[in-house]
Length: 431
Image (tube, rainbow, N blue to C red; front, side, top):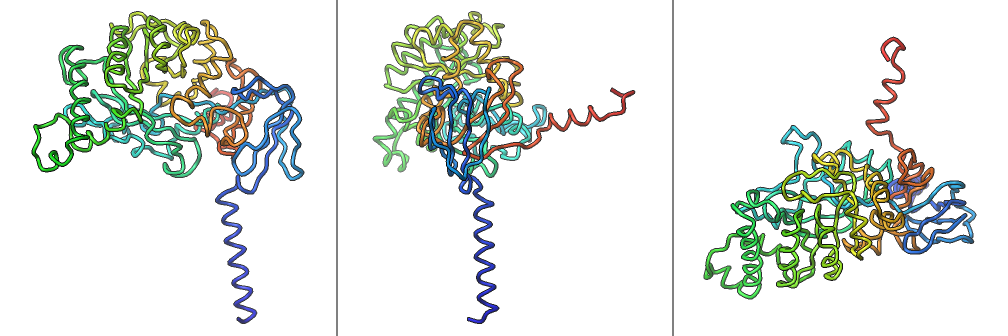
């Protein structure tokens, strides 16, 4: 090989190495967050603690953790350090402009209002301008839920990293979503008929599992659901995939519990405005609830018993709660996902312990959706989704000063930042 070719080959190798470092900056960096009050969540708080991050993973958490010589230090003295927050009910990246149909991808028509095979994350826009504001305020993971119909489709949990949807997905699916509180939406005229229709789907799925060959030969009766929807429901009836029912009314929650018991389903209640009336039964059945604390105004007849004490009463009864936005109008699901910390603050104001409120936006949703081995706590081996706060994260004036997702700090400007700069620099007479 000539000198020229050798130099050229060496240059290409260096370029390739530089590309790898650029593409995977976390792999080249060790970070030590030192001196803060660390809340591992899975254990007691640590005063003057240290969190060490390497290769995008947490490798050390404690009061006397040695800091590697090559580490970039983040001084967290006087600050609070927690896991990144998880919002368990969003349409983040699925809705860009509420009034423009072409930018709404959270709903499938389905066959007879059954869209079990709908994988909502496939329509997620990883370049949505809604992502950065959520991340900047400490949300590092989020669950996207489909909506509408009787069976809305499948949900997924994602990290707020830059890149493609594939890069963002942490686990999919994490639940099958059904909306059993709205008879008209399910194509029925009463709640009782809706429940019969859901039971029929579960029976059809069980039959489909054992008669697939006959189904393929068209040698069975007709089903309301398509073949793909029946296929998608199999993990649900086998208890491998949770059924997340969006339901508010006490009697509807009771019906959901009966169905789960009859078919041995793994149930999650979402919304749950009147769940506090069923707290004992939900705790006994070990059914978690996704609910909020920002709003006590009923959205309809099914939520007459809505109250802001709901999360506190449920957690006090032993129910695992994941806090979600319930401000109303859908704004909290797509455009203000970041407000989850205000939900937590309100939950504390209305009786939930601070410790449980922190779990309800970190560890508990991670456990509910089967990713607690990745996120939700500050422990060695977990993904480095870490936030350094200026103080109590549930206080209104507290800021997320450093946000790490998979070990990479995010500092981009949001649309809100740009608007602030625009109007701060306007001529005085126009302010």
